[in-house]
Each structure stands twice: as structure tokens, then as C-alpha cells.
Amino acid sequence: MSTPTDRPTERPADRGDDHTRRRLGLVRERRLAVDRVACSGHGVCAQLLAGVTLDEWGYPVVADDRVGEDGRAVADTAVRLCPARALYLR
Ligand code: SF4
Image 1 (cartoon, helix red, strand yellow):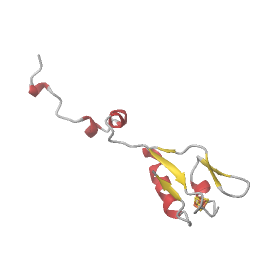
Image 2 (image 1 turned 180 degrees about the vertical axis):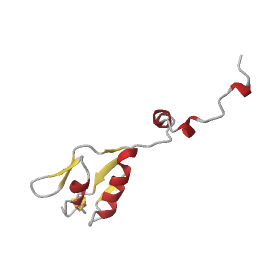
Image 3 (image 1 turned 90 degrees about the vertical axis):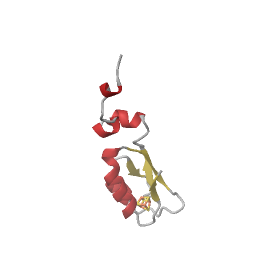
Image 4 (image 1 turned 120 degrees about the vertical axis):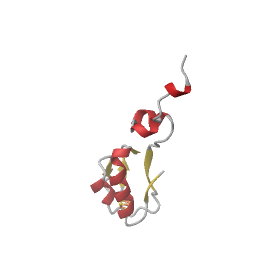
């Protein structure tokens, strides 16, 4: 039988265990989205993000909209640099 003192003192979120943090809902995967009305086809997003290409008219095609923690910094940069403010994370 375990006693309260047998419990680990470290919470799962403190260990940096991504899988556990995801299961507990502490890490939320973000999704990249484009406001197609606002987008003016500058193509900055396609230059920065591997999951984005441009169609024949220069407008973005988002092949993979998932943004994990490792891709978050570059995705934030792409959102900030989008000249039409058409790129966002949800
Ligand atoms: S950077 Fe912004 S305006 Fe340019 S193609 Fe991408 S979403 Fe559209």
C-alpha cells in the first residue's frame, strides 16, 4: 500500500515529457490557416514554411497545417511577416 510520501513529487508537466503533457492537454498543437480573402499572394509564408507551397497564381496551398512545438517559432515569424495579415494560427 502506498502512502502519500511514496508519490513522486514531480508533476508530469515538470519533466518535459511531451507525450504526457499532450495527453494532459498542456500542449496544444496549433493549426496554420490562411484568410483567403485577405491574402494578397506575396508568398512569404511559402518561403518560410515547409508545409506551404504556392499555386500557379502565387497563392498559398497549405499541405500540412499542423504546427508542433518545434515549428512554432518559425510559424510565429511567418504570421508576423505576412504583409496582408492573412496568415494565422488557430
Ligand atoms: S504571406 Fe500572407 S499574403 Fe503572402 S501568400 Fe502567405 S498568407 Fe498570403
